[in-house]
Amino acid sequence: SQQGEEDPQALSIQEGENATMNCSYKTSINNLQWYRQNSGRGLVHLILIRSNEREKHSGRLRVTLDTSKKSSSLLITASRAADTASYFCATEIIQGAQKLVFGQGTRLTINP
Amino acid sequence: EADIYQTPRYLVIGTGKKITLECSQTMGHDKMYWYQQDPGMELHLIHYSYGVNSTEKGDLSSESTVSRIRTEHFPLTLESARPSHTSQYLCASSEFRMVGEKLFFGSGTQLSVL
Image (cartoon, rainbow over all chains, first blue to last red; front, side, top):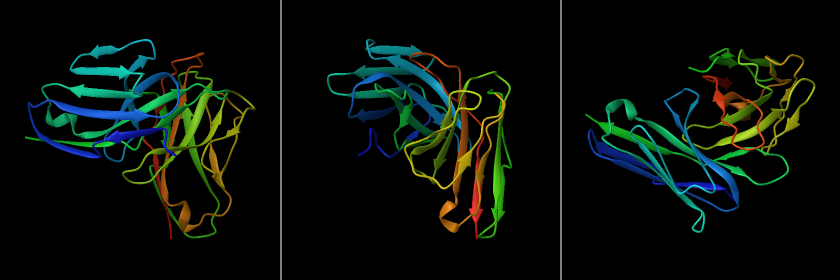
């Protein structure tokens, strides 16, 4: 079963609008991270939120974490065409071999 | 921009060929990873390394092998490529921490096996 599931799978909005993506996970985590992937490229780290944090900001990004619901959300405010990409959540799970488990991503399209 | 490089960027080969995908990083990171990603899908960890002479298998069973003779270099080898190996392969590295490791990714190698 998947550790991380993202919702929606695809999102299309107009430039200037806010975009919200959600991530749910199953097991306890050390932290949750969000990454961005432009088409055909590698992933770029955006933001990390620790399990004892509830909200974190970075520029136009706002991330929330609710460990009781095992869910996180990524909000991009005042979207731009350059924000068009896939966004992945990754959970650092609590187990012997420390590693990140990635969700399937949300494909975000910003229409000019 | 991350200092992690993958070559080749694209590779089209015939069934049965032996191939090596190269990955190098200049950040001095101890940990390195190989992920496999099909279009529009999640990343699957196939190999990782804690440092020189360390290699571990990931969550997704893979017929590939890796080596880690130098800190900066983590090549992935397929002894006999098959069409089922067609996918994007992403290399990543991170500075070792007890928690909160952030991964730096290369641009990927898109492999097509005919």
